[in-house]
Image (cartoon, rainbow, N blue to C red; front, side, top):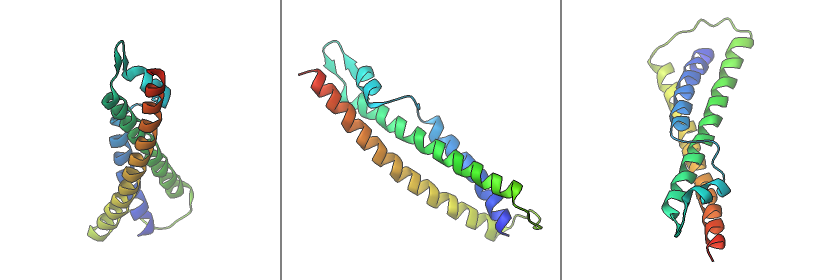
Amino acid sequence: MLFSVLQLTAMFLTFASAYFISKANLALSAKSISELAATKWGANLELAKSFAVQNGDNCMGVVALLLSLVAQIIITFYPHEEVFTINLPIVAISLGITALVALILGKSSSIRSRKLAQEAVLIIKTRHK
């Protein structure tokens, strides 16, 4: 049962990572966000915050993808006799684990986004004084 849960959880985490990665772009730093949000006459702070959210989501997507990879490596290389089976309790456990990981990643994304947005806004305000 453990390996079936891991296998299914790995699949669900792969889906979760694809969701986070598809929402964002990894290359956004506080400096690049401030440059993208700058205009000739000032800066668009909301755009800077939006870029920061995209960056946070993308980073958490990469984390979810790596967690999925680790689960799949364990399944592949750890010797086991269990046959892969799917039943309602296994699906429920796998979805529960995935939901918990997604909640943690979502909160982490928010924290990262907020910090990055604050840094970008500080750069913008410093530049436009």
